[in-house]
Length: 365
Image 1 (cartoon, helix red, strand yellow):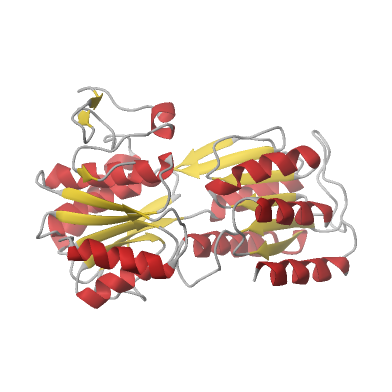
Image 2 (tube, helix red, strand yellow; image 1 turned 120 degrees about the vertical axis):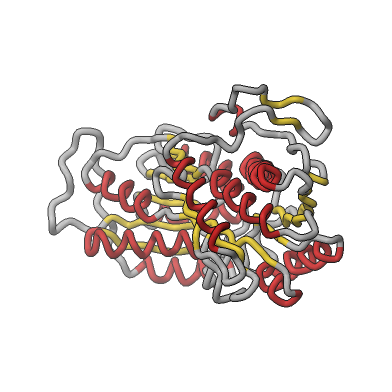
């Protein structure tokens, strides 16, 4: 599939006239009759009806709609992290894409390498830890939505056991596991969270298998940090509950969905492309969350009582207002070590470097 996509992309781009050079600092915006800004998007999975990549492609479509003829977007989907990503990034840069969005942590090193080769091309490395002069990084406080979902799961679980299908043991995923567990135990101190690591972002077969295993181990609520709807469908099949992630997945699990933690990149992507057009693009490190509208909790399923909905939405408002913090102490890890003292809370750097699992998590990194 990857080879076919690249071949198609190359053939299509060969028919397009070379674009104008990007504006330098202080340069006036392009005139109305200039060639459009060519914007590339690199996806780690196929574009499906719901999930991580769906949300990013919705943002691309919103960008295209907002900026119209000023931009031309290209998508290359299902690109593995590593050498394949490096090749595709070079292709996009050589074909005149002046702004390139990548949407996976594993693209970080390929982006930095290719960015050095094409200093005039601007890169938006989403969920990546390190930027450069022509590489901006952006991430979301996904853990905020996880904490809220944990509150709902704590109220709804009868077995006091939740299952968590996890992709890779990177800080972003660990933050989510811990915040979910802390949210769950804030309303149900007996709750535990069983984790299964896949070391894969998008593998519906393995995701489903892991979900089935967790339910066999007593989990009656499932959460996941992978890219498909497989966990939701497994919960639907077995009559359990599940937290939709990335996007609303009621269509896949109309009875199983407890709520959805959804991510919204529309405003960010459009703003960054507009800044390029106006000659104002600068490298930046952005973290957005509930307050900024990048993370939302909603789309409650039919089995969720009104009181639980109201509590979760009230906590969401408090979180947006800065009145609560998912990692406020005291917090112990699952070995009994104190990680956050009473009266304190983790700062940005500590959250970014998180490498421990909270008390109540059954599993290890």
